Amino acid sequence: MVARASGITYGFQRVHAALQTGHVLTVQQQRQEPVRCFMQQSMLDGACGTHVLAMILVIFDLAKASAMHDMSQRKYGVAAAAWKIFGPKYFSGIHAKEWAELVNQLALPLKLTAKYGAKEHVDRYALDWLMRGELVALAFASVKHQRTKHWALAVGIEGVASGSKRQPQRILLLDPGGSEPSFQAFNARLRLPTSGLGSRRAKQLHLPADDAKPWTVFWHYESESWSAELVRLLAAVRVRKLQ
View 1 (cartoon, rainbow, N blue to C red):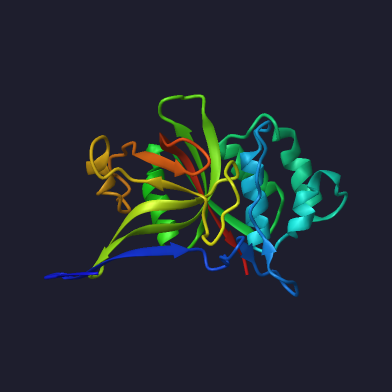
View 2 (spheres, rainbow, N blue to C red):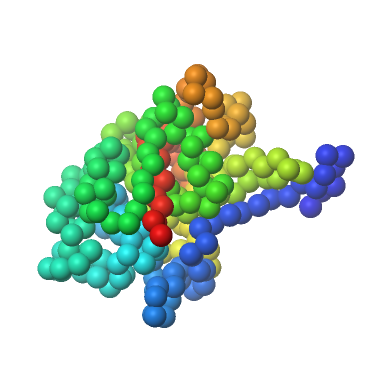
């Protein structure tokens, strides 16, 4: 920690309250031992959006992890319903608006709030929701290779605080394309630039007025499993469990 005239400056990290770190990442489901909640996709499928949904259902205790692992063979229950709706997209992938529509078709006790692209200030809303401890499904695309689009589950945020001010710097991800996290709640990050392209805009990512001018923010994707690259957010979908 560094003392300054305005107060104490320190780094902070906030992750979703349901996640339990250890040798593997787990959640506590009702009347059961802690279960793994990470779902890893293969090199052959385009089902990152489906895997993100599966992780959300396990984290919120709406489906058993074992059932989601075997959802293509299930005939009843939430896992079977999820496969019926999302199965046709398993190899082709799924666009952001369609993902939200299909999740709503499941008629589960979930409330979705979605923002799409720079015009809807997707970056600012994503950061605000994560600062509030929410789960956020993120769709993002490579800046260099426009064909590369991907889904990951944002489970937390890191940044710097000074006095009452907090400056988010990194979004913490459970990326289904990466390896299972160990002793931490994430396996990838989206880092705001601190210098160069987009750094000035990154410092102004507070919630906007309705008439605020939109702009595109570039993020540095970082993971042990994949090469670092520059990406932009296509969509952010906050997912809440209804009581």
